[in-house]
Picture 1 (cartoon, one colour):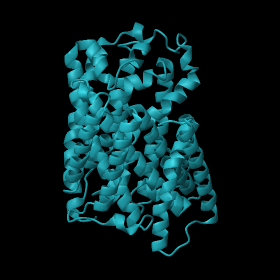
Picture 2 (picture 1 turned 90 degrees about the vertical axis):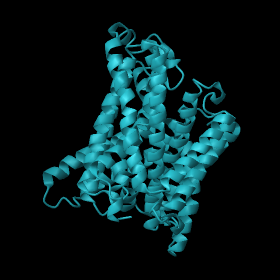
Picture 3 (picture 1 turned 60 degrees about the horizontal axis):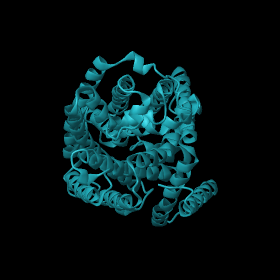
Picture 4 (picture 1 turned 135 degrees about the horizontal axis):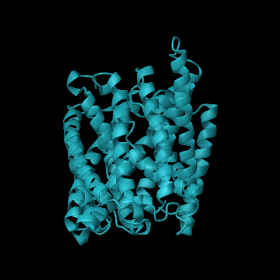
Length: 475
C-alpha cells in the first residue's frame, strides 16, 4: 500500500475529489431542485450548503494536517475520537453510501440511454439492469488491474466530463432571462411546496448527494505523495465543484420556470439545453453524462474498496477484507462491494426504485460519518491536542468545527424520520462484521456506551422493517 509506484500526486488527488463529486447529480440538478424549492429558497439553500460544506472541507484539511497518522479519513477520525463501534459505523455507513450511490448512477445512466433506446426505460427495466450488471463487472475487473491505472483513467474522465458542463454554463448564461428567474421567487404561486424553511429543508439531501466525495482525498491520504496535498486537494476540489453546481442550478432557473423544470425527466440538464438549442443539446449533455457516470463509477469503486481495506487493516473489520492481489488492490473488499451493488440492482428491478430514492438513501447514510468527523475536529481543538503552541489557530479550528457539526446535525433533521429509520435498517446488519473482527482479536463486542448506541440502532431498524412491511415506509 505504500510502494512509490502507488503514490498519488496533487493532480490525481484533486481528480479523485472532483471525479467523486461530479457524477450524475449535477446533470439532474435542475429538476431535483425545482421539484422542492423556488428561486429564493434555492439561493438560501446553496448559501447554507456552501458554508456548511466548506467548513467540512476545512475539517478534513485540518484533520489531515493535525493527525497525519490517521489514514483513510472519515473512518479513522470517528474511531480515534469515539471508539471502535463509532469508527466501524462510520466506515460501514460511508461504504454503503458509496455503493448505493453507484446503484443510483447505474439507474441514471441507463435512464439517459432510454432517451435514445426506449428498451432501457427509466433505467430499471430488465434489459437496463442486465446491461448495468455487465458494466458493473467490467469496471470491477478494470479496478483489479491496479489503483494507479484506474486513478489515471479517472483523471481523463474528470476532464472529459467538465467540458459539456462548461458548454452548458456559457450557453445558458447567454439565454438567461431575468423575468423567468424572478417570476415567483418565494414559491407563493405553488402552496404545495410549503414555506421557505420547508423548501430549504427539502432540498438539503440533494445538495448532500452532489457533494459526497468531498472527503475523497482524505480516504487516500495513505497513498498521497505529499501529506499536505490531501487538504489542498479537498479545498480546491470543493470550490471548483461548488461553482459548477451553483451556476448550473441558478442559470437553469432563468431558462425555464420552476413548474417546467420540475416536470423534466432526468437527466434534466439535457432537457434544459434542448429547450435552448434543440435536440443536439440533449445529445451533447447525454454524452457528457455517460462519460461523467463512467468516471464516477470508477472513483467510487476505488473508494469503496479502500475504506473496507483500511478498516480491516486496522482490525476494525475482519481480516479477510485486507487481502490484496498482485496489483495491490483490496480484492475481497472490491468483490464484497460489487456483489452488494449487484444485489441492489436486482432489488431495483423488482421495487422500481427511482434515481431520486436511491440518492436520498445514499445521502442519509453519509450523514453519520460526516457528523463524527466534525465532532472529532471539535474534540481535538476543544481539548487542545496538537495545538500546544497555536492558541489562535486552535480557536479558529474550534469555530470551524462547531459550524461543521451544527451543519451535520441540521442535515439529519432535514433528511427526515423516514431516511433516518431506513439508515438504521442498513446500519444494523453491519454488527456481524464488527463481531467477527472483535472475535479475531478476542475482545468484548461492546463497551457500556456502545451497547446503548447499538440498542438505538436496533430499535430504529425494527421500526423501519415494520414500516416497510406495513407499507408506511417505502423504497
